[in-house]
Image (cartoon, rainbow, N blue to C red; front, side, top):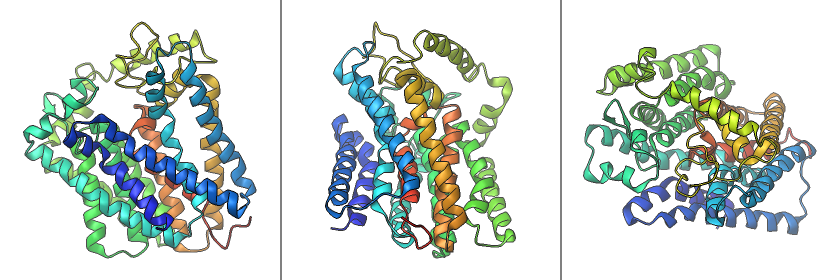
Amino acid sequence: MTFLGLTSIAFLLALYSTALKYLLHNRYILLLPDFAFTSLLLLLAAREVLDRRPIRRENVPFLIFICAYLGIGILQIANPNVPTLLAGLEGFRKTCLYISPALIGLYLGWSPRTATRFIRILAIAAVPLCLYGIKQVFSPSAFDLQIPEQNTAGDAVYNVFGAFRATSLFASPFALGFMGNVVVALGVFLASVRTRAPWVWIIVCSGVAAIVVSLTRVSILSGLVLAAVAPPLILRAHGWVVRAGAGLILVALVGMAISMTPVGDLIVRSLDLRHLDEDRAYLRFEGYDTALAELAKNPITGYGAGSAGDGLDSYFAGSVYLPASHNVLLKIGFELGLFGLLAFLLFCLSWVRIAIHRYQAAAGREEKALIGLACGLFIVFTVQGASGSAIDTFPANAITFFLMGLVAGLKSPCQSI
């Protein structure tokens, strides 16, 4: 089987492993994509050793910072504040493990054409999950209403103003909202490479619907930002009329989805600043103050893997613990200390440098669109991370990091070794 097939299987497991957990009532099913990604990475590492393939010089910092981040995460499992090995391992999985798909993308060395084939598979596989979220809103079954019971997050996560938030078959409404943004971006990319229009409309509209029914403000904000940045980034090879029209269509789709569905009033209310106290949004700022004050006591080493992991409070009884960071940088700093935070920031900066260079040197429409797709998802990740721990929002996080790595390792005539 080719690496395209193996990678597709790994990401299909990532998309549907949580659904299997709900069906089989077995949380260890969630380890399936972990094993798949690890096996794929080992196979790629073996190929690199056997073929003695050199790495591009400009990718060396990117590789170093990923490894540094993962290495610090492993060391933080042994932080004195982490009560048990299991707590540390689960914390590492949430905060660090899913950055590793960036290494897979880096070492695959695909051409833009192969990457496009993978994205088609990924987008089509994600559509049923988005559509199931719509079904949950209009007709939630007993199975759907039992989903919160199988997760460790509080009941408030799954309700807003007394209304049930759709999760589809993901772990939370935030995971659905983030994934909706990913699907919209994939749809715009497929439009740029001349995929048949009916497929593009199905993909984009299902992604927009997933964003809306998740009832998460940060996802809706990310969607509006994506509507502004995706057309100029992904459709760069097209005229400005096409890019402007695509942006207006995306904004219109979000507006129609909000205004023409029963969740419209709930979304408008959740965006109303007068309700900040009622829906706990204002309390986030108090949480930031408390977390920063605690972090200031131990900034270098932080408090260990999992100490800011949502749903891990049962492990950390008697230890320093941040129940909900609501910010990706605060989460990383709290768990991995300043060195871990620095490694992550340098990872991001090194990738931005690579992406700018690749974008400027891109030879064809498909390559430029692929780089624009990764840039768009990185921007969505940044917006999501401003008020949530986006780094552990699976599987959208893994897809984002994978595409970032894929761009860094992209095989193209315009790139020299």
